[in-house]
Amino acid sequence: MAKDSLRELYVNELKDLYNAETQLVKALPKMAKAASNAQLRQGFEEHLRQTSEHVSRLEQIFEKLGEKPTGKKCLGMEGLVKEGAETMQEDYENALMDAAIIGAAQRVEHYEIAGYGTVRAFAELLGEDEHVSLLAQTLEEEKQTDEKLSQLAEEINSEAAQGEAETESRQPSKPKTRQAA
Image (cartoon, rainbow, N blue to C red):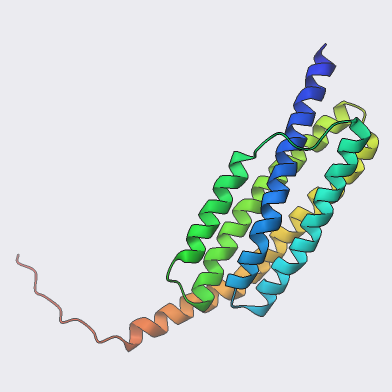
């Protein structure tokens, strides 16, 4: 009985991830378009290709399970995508926008890492060795994407901070007011 209920949970979590990945397939081109840094834009384009592969791997798992991948909406990813869209509508420029987009993208990656780690553990418990291999491959790619984003953030965040400092140094200083004792 316990194994059957774990299988149902496993399938449910896989459906959630499938919907999350399909939402991301639609969001990544918008993130790439909003990025001003060429490396960041290329990173999003590459991750779009990977995300399409993630969808295909999940479809393979569903086929092996004799299940359909549809029927569940991932509210977590929906919220993360909405937050990312709001970020892209902000009036940030260049490196500052890129820094904000990286933050949104890393929240997505961490969400996916958690989801894939969970379903991989379920697949191991259920003895689904082929699934474990496919899920581990995707999990590793998500971790690599997060690491690439972290590396890009080091440079881009510095540029954003430098640009902010330059903007502040060009603004006239306000006269200092004397505080009453």
